[in-house]
Amino acid sequence: MIDFGGLETRPAQTWGAVRLVPLVRPEPIRDLRLHAKIYGDEPSLVALPDKTSYISYIPHAFVASWTEDGTPAAAYGTQLGQPLRHIGIRTRRRMARRVDKDRLRFLPLHLALEGYLALHFGGPSIAWEEWTHQALSHGLSPRIEAAYSGADIQDLDDALRVFEFYPGQCGLLLYVADTLASAFVVPHPEDYQALHPTLIRDLYGELIYEYALFYPARDFIATIDATTVSSLADLRAQAVRREREWAEFHDSVMTEGLLTSAERGQVVYRLGRYTLRRWLPSFERQRENHLSETITDDEGRLAYLKTFRLSEAQSRRGYLLDQLAEHDWHLPSTAEALGTDVAGLGLRLERAGFGHLLRQDIMDAYRKARR
Image (cartoon, rainbow, N blue to C red; front, side, top):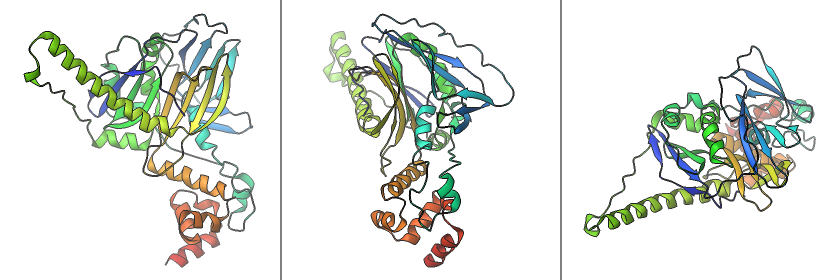
């Protein structure tokens, strides 16, 4: 579970369908720093430790620098230059790779997305007759999910360009059409100012892309009761109160959405007294489901966070895979747990994009049973 302790919200800034909510640290983290390594716009092939490979749009990596004794870490390389231009597919080595004694290069968001793509990737654990030979031999390979670049999200470029930084700002909540799209947290305000432009290069879900096209963000107007104001001190007190109420609203959103979404954590790397983890949600229906990756210190304080909002379809796929794995990929048992029959489960798997894992004659029988 993600602990947002120590981070405070500030009044939001709105542009078109995009609302940006600053996150501020009263005291920055000094012994862990982040900077970006820009790659470009061509697809990348990432070699994973289990000898599988991963192809995706990876425009940049983050490099974390830390100290073992708690002294301030150097924040070198925090200037963002022009993207490097290459031809063809680049090869990257692993999602997280140590490049020096106290430096780790990792691929932001892709750590979290890899956890989702690898979810029950091995496929059926028992050779039930309904599954194809391909499913039993190769599992879910190839596993494919779609996402949009931030450059495709309407209004996001302008919203990020005109954004005004707050003193001590170390993060941001990004809403599209008042739907929480992602959260981004770094250790130090200087890191955030350098990495703020990378939000336009990040990946966003289909839901966020569509909401940006069709639903503008609402303007929340703070109303002050003039009968309670008789001096500048009264006016200042009313303004502070309205700002606090607005901050409390976003605090509750963090608690109810992101905070409760991260339920299954996996340690990726140890960075001195810090730990890099990725998190999977519960995939429950009728609630937000966010993939996330975090760096926390030995007391659980959040130093780094990046999240990806899953669409309803992606949440359904995760939920179905969880249910199948929980019941050893036995269709009758899984169907009973889901409150349906085997034919209904088979067609549900087909709608989710997993129909090719079932034998064709079995799928034909399920369709016939439904007719």
